[in-house]
View 1 (cartoon, rainbow, N blue to C red):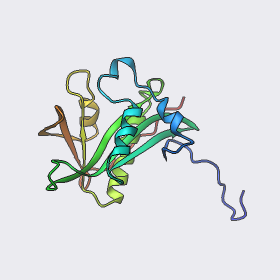
View 2: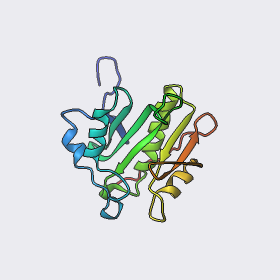
View 3: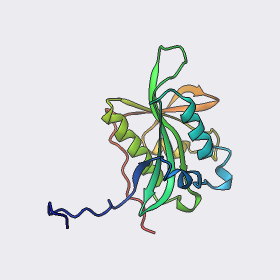
View 4: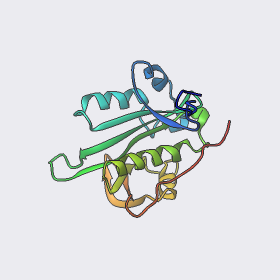
Length: 176
């Protein structure tokens, strides 16, 4: 107990942490399954992209549960969608759940965490793109409430979640 009478133990359940010099190696160690590598860039590529973007556009975070890194996400914040200054969007840019941690609800947690952050920033819509095809994550995103638009970005389908009308996906990752 602290002097304020409250227990200050580490929070239980997954949480997001900034990528810092202290967490960089843990973030770089996140690896998706071999059969997913074609569908999502590795963490190192995502961090390089974050570095070369204007400040505040990329929001990279490490997903931690019970003191161990279980995944990585990167949101995009008010990105110039068309590159001409006429349309700005925010959403989930990358999601890498470590191969050993998949199927435990961390992907749902990540989507909910980004949705919460975007709502906190006053955003009404959350965008995502995904690798097309039967092995891609379209079903995952659709099950969370994303609607497929008629757009593509970089050859990938675009999905949108109406944050004003859709409650944030919730999930408690399965215990180990």
